[in-house]
View (cartoon, rainbow, N blue to C red):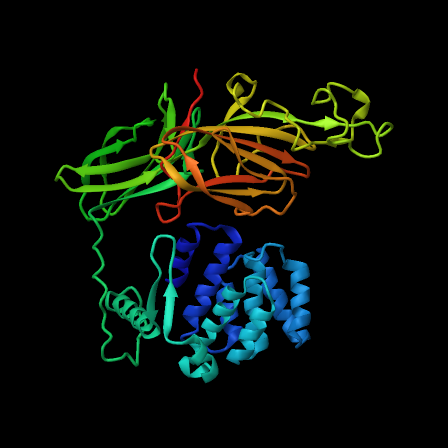
Length: 503
């Protein structure tokens, strides 16, 4: 049960190794209520990690090293060289540190804590995870009094959606125990829960009975759609009764989309399900594509029983890509690339055919008019971008250093004086909003979604334009641009609409 929920939770904003890590740790923590041996707990967790994954290989390596060398510092150096990353949040190395701290800590709370913290990386998470496992095994009595005094009795939690609130530790323990008792009461788990305090009772609502007919949606690919594309989902209708169900399926699309199935008569056999593929595309003649497109699937039986499910298809960013632009220089004339001192009169090798193999690109060179007054007339290609991390390399065939421009015209339903822009980049870039240069960097760096950000950005009600100039020096473009709605608890904007090109 714990692993099932951890997988569902992890898939919200992570994939692959990170999901394996959450499954691994949830299995360990669930087992720790019944098993005290760290080695056996680790093996229990590895059941839920693919053998060929980086996480599994890392954990097995640490286990083997623990038998060879008792010095955790040597193990730390080895695992960083083999499994480390310049990204402090990388899940494989952080979970590796948790396991190393547990094995070398030998059940000692303070020693385990210090190993985790002094190993670096995502220290608040590694120390908390390792010590939480020991806390489950040994209880509150296993925490040294000196550390208990520093920890205190309060827990402070908070997300971008919930105002931080202070809770007492005992309230969290009580809530957790009540959840366990409720699941045991309802037959979801078969575990006997003992030593329950008198004031703790099964308090969660009774589970909702299976509906007569249930509706599920499976995405066949990305949960997004752009002009000129089709998106597919599988609609699953399950009859949970012992009687045949006959009725009508309705698919109600948002204003921007249309589907190949709007209404259909169906007959579902007892205790069976029907699966059908449903195709979506944008309506012809659309002037703007919203980010948010909610479809409702509804089944109405002949007995007037209603089952329904809503789901979304995110509208892709529709942007104009201009470029690529690139320069070359002649090594017989110049000892190094000339950049600002001497430039070809024209970009894209229109000046000197003998300068090949010495490519460079200059973020400060205006390859087009950067007032963008006539950008609509400049040659370029419109394309759909389905994620905040733009898939530029898929759309630029030229290999080598180059520069491209992305023009994003969008509609905002309200005016915002305090929006925020977050840029992730691995190379130089410039970003203009409505003709004003708002962000720029000439540095090459490791890509992270939050490399740079700017608050108090003004977005107009109605039409806006973001122009992005992006450089590629190395192997690939890595660039993302995200807008955050500070007014709405710092959520990302989800109610914008991409303006589509005329014609």
